[in-house]
Length: 341
Image (cartoon, rainbow, N blue to C red; front, side, top):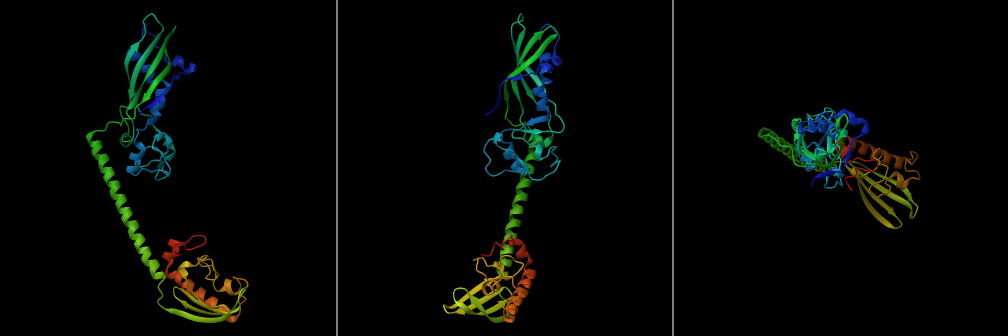
């Protein structure tokens, strides 16, 4: 696949800058005029990407793909891994990467070679076939750039000489920019280093995940009792309720007795949402202690027995949050710990 562009018209205001005074148009003169044309100026500051540039940059760790990217370069815009002006020696930042080219801060050189000129000498028009290439690019950009392109330039003879009036049938190569053996070795070495970095990062992430799972398991395993509390509550459905609460260093056992019978419930501190207060919701959205047995779940005006239970629970919960601060950090969200359901 190649990039193809339709006729590129040269602005009339610009034409006089590119006149050639000789009676006939030579290859050298045509090449000079084409090299200074606006379209070639564009490619001095916008180095073209080869077709696999997006994948190569990702392999090197220079950027990450967005979800849902298509296969073609024209459908995507790469995103740099870091927001910096100069990234890994490349003279561009994230905003400088476009769907199929780099916008460089410093222009590069372009060589133009005319491969043929057609048109009768007695006519005032010449069709000039040409090729162009980047003779040199920054070392890392070479890995992603294309070689150049080709096209057809139309010249017309005016009273002051030959002028370039349009460029048509332009084809932009997707072939990789040629690398020296030393550059190929450096390229391969960087890919190897990036693969090693990713493997190390993955191993570290897996180790951290295992360590966190172990800490989460410890945060749910009781090692000592904080106290037991008994008080009377009230259920809207079953009326007066007798509540027995056993508090450990990792959670609660709640036994309720009413006309419907006896219910035993366990609540781990790692399950409790709104972690500023144990008297909130568990992950089943059932109110515990204050919310279930007081008219206002944030009330501090319960009976002495009720308040003793709530204060005891919150004291144990506060100690748990200090002991397992890493679990809190790893699980916290705006409404629940999020990883112990």
